[in-house]
Image 1 (spheres, rainbow, N blue to C red):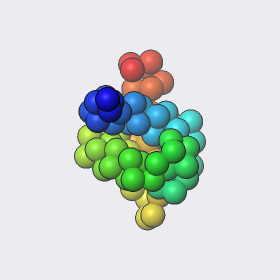
Image 2 (image 1 turned 120 degrees about the vertical axis):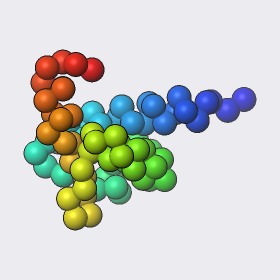
Image 3 (image 1 turned 180 degrees about the horizontal axis):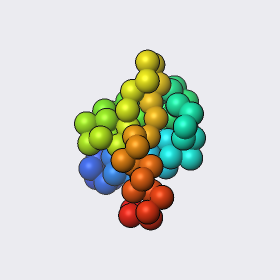
Image 4 (image 1 turned 180 degrees about the vertical axis):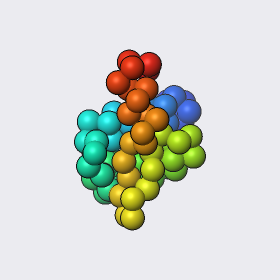
Length: 78
C-alpha cells in the first residue's frame, strides 16, 4: 500500500520550508533541496506550491523564504 501523495507533499513542503527558513537570507537551489529531501522531482513540485502560496520566492535559479514566511516563523505562528 502506498502512502497518501497529499500527505507526502505536506511532509515535503514542511521540510523544504524548514530548510529555506534555516538558510535565510541565503538561497537554496532545487538540486540542493532535492538531495536534502531525497527527491528532486518532489522538491520541484512542492517548491511550486510554496511559491504559489507566497512562502518561497524565486531568485534567479534558486529559492528563498519570503519575508512573510520569515515573519510568521519568528512569531512562532506555525
